[in-house]
Each structure stands twice: as C-alpha cells, then as structure tokens.
Image 1 (cartoon, rainbow, N blue to C red):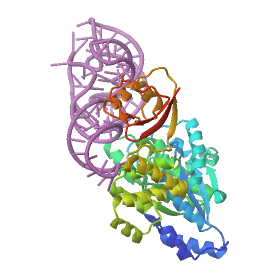
Image 2 (tube, rainbow, N blue to C red):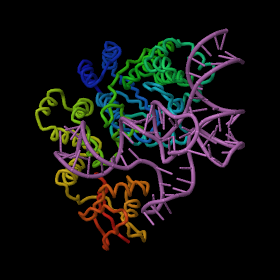
Image 3 (cartoon, rainbow, N blue to C red):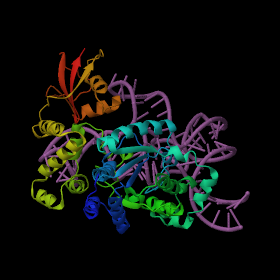
Length: 399
RNA sequence: GGGGAGAUGGCUGAGUGGACAAAAGCAGCAGACUGUAAAUCUGCCGGCGAAAGCCUACGUAGGUUCGAAUCCUGCUCUCCCCA
C-alpha cells in the first residue's frame, strides 16, 4: 500500500503524545518508509502483571491503532519474562513478585483484550520470554557492560528510593537492560510507552546502536490518572476502568469521575480536538460527561451498547427507578432473613458483617421498600427487585 | 565482615506487660445533599453472633508470665553507619 505524506503522518502520530524523542528522526524514518514502501516496526510492550487491561493501557493501544491505520506494522509485545523481573519504573518500592501461572493466565487475557482496540489482522503478538530465556550469561554480561550504574541511579524513581533508604533490588536494576534488549531483538523503529518508560525506551536506542541497528524513536504518551483523579490508573489501586468491563460499568464509572478529571479524559481518550472540547466546556458538565461516557463505551463496545448504557444510567440514577434490564439471581437458601439474602445474592458484599452494616445503614431496598433491620424477613413472594447500596440492582428469584 | 535501628490493620503511623480488635489520618462502604460529579455533613469500617461473648490478628517459630503488639531466644526481611 502507499503511505500517506510523512508530515501528515507525523501530525496524526503527534496528537495526544507527551513527547517524541527525537522528533526529527521520526520524520526521517517516516520519509524513508514512504520512499521504500516499507512499513515501520512499532513496538509497545505490556508486562502481564495484572489480570486486565484498562484505559491507561488504552491510551497506548489507541496510538498503536493510529500507526496501524497509517499502514505500519504493530508488534505487540507481551512481557512475560519482564513481568517476572518487575518494572521499577515510577515505583516507590519493589513490585510484589508474581507467579509463572499468573503470568501465563494474564498473558492470555491480554492477548484477547488488546483486540478490543487493535486490528487483529495487522498485529503481531510476541512474547519476550521467547528470546530472553535463551539469553546466555555471556551475552547478558555484555549487556550489563553497556550501562553505567550512576546513570540508572540518576533516574527519579531510583534516586528517590535511594535517598529515602527504600530497598532497591539488583533485579530491578537489570530491568531496563532487558527491555532495551527486546528492541534489539525486534529491530524496532519506534517504541511506544508512557512517560514513565523514558529511561527504558531511550536505553533501547543505545543498545540498538551497539548492535549496529538504527536506534528506535520513543513515542511517549501521558500517564492516565485513575478514577480517583490523583493516582496513576491501576488495578491494584482499584481506580481503574477495564477495557473488558460491561457497557454499564464503564459508563457508570465514567459518570462518577470528577468534572476536572473528565476534561483530562477528554483530552487523552476521546477523539475530540481542542476546539470541540472548548465547545463542550460551555455545556452542562453532566451532558459533557455523558457524551464522554457514550464515546468510550462505543469505542470499547459499540454504539448500540452505549445507547443502552445511557438509558440504564438514566433510569437508575436520574429517574431513580428500577431498571428493566438487570442481573437476575436465584436465591435458594432456606433462610428468610434479609441479611442472608444480601450476603448470598450480592457481588459486592462478601461478609455477613458487611451485609449487616449495609442493611442497618439503610442500604437495602426490596420492591421499593427499605429494610433497615438485618434480621427482618423479606416478603413471601417468588421474585422481587432488590437494590443493594447505591449501585447494585438485582432481580432475585426465590426458590 | 563489624556495629546500630526496625518490621503494627488496604496504606501512613501511635502504642513498650493488663483499660488493645489496637489512637490518629488516608483509602473504602452506607446515608443525607446532588448532576450516582466534586465539596460537605452523619455513621460504619477483622470474622462469627440478636446480644453477652467467642475466634483470628501487631514479620515468623518458639519461650517467660495468671496475662504479651509490648519481655527473652532462634529465623526471615529492611534500613543506617563503618570496612
């Protein structure tokens, strides 16, 4: 296929990025690619350290998708080996170690979830254990001689830990080398990552140079704040929105972010340009937020789901009535106490104490009526509508 | 290799023999208010129990004691200083 004008391409690539290092090299790579009619190899690696991908990864995937649309070759790297080492980037302490089984399991879900965003036909999925587990001590030693300790210690995350006396394991020190070596193995032209990947990605350039390759260009994307609005989005902090979540959940979670954060999300996750965002700012924040939620649900699911999620949200929260389309549960225990019902049927309540607390604080509504005593008995009926807390709506059938 | 300090609930961090299921703050949950926003206010916030209470928990394994988060010993891990 023919490539678009390199400058046009650059413009598309640049949108939403935090930095491109070095930008002029990117342009010359694009020019060379157009001239030789050869797609560029674009790498982005994710370590399978968590069971699900979220919107934070989504930003990077989205950019990869841009490259795909421009006709370049996307190499999606699953860091199944590097996950084991644990990336120290941006960390204030050592990552908890993760088992091989977990890594394998997570890798599988990653492979599935990336295609919510990427075009499956034009994506190569690779795993770095492939070459890294083959890497012998000799070669490895050669890598270590390419890097100076003081340079690694210059990094903000390490220097902070070092000064504060927080432990740094040698293993973490090694991490950047391994990631950089991946780029050599993959002969990358471009590597994408969050700004916290700066050191790792730039080290890849040094390594490639050493191995006689032309160094990759780093394309850096902003780090997305989680739904709490302050910390980096991550599963372990519980402030994430998963790519694989249901339309209702994605929509609901987006509606609950602060107005301030919404604009940040607009900038990083929507397709709106600054002009459009400016117009949206003039509207009621809730309307703008709904538009954002719809856009993202359409992106990760489809427009129809977005419509349904909107309707669902409006019924539940704007009209405060019971939605039609809710999860159905069967309750078959012999107890007629409402505590037992909640405990069994709810996904968010896991202990009896929690159930009792929630009920006595007024968080349980059955068929429109509040049940504030955990030991009260629910109506003698075969099915009813149950609302648990603010967000959980269920239809429960009694057997 | 030598010397010193330390490990407390999801996190930060008080507690140095009984009043400790463990202060305080953060996070979380529920309610009120709303735009399920933010902010604010109120309550809850180890498990089981209607309750009395019982069980589990202050790195880990033992020990001393009527009684241990608190004292002693081994072990694991972390930090600091010296080499």
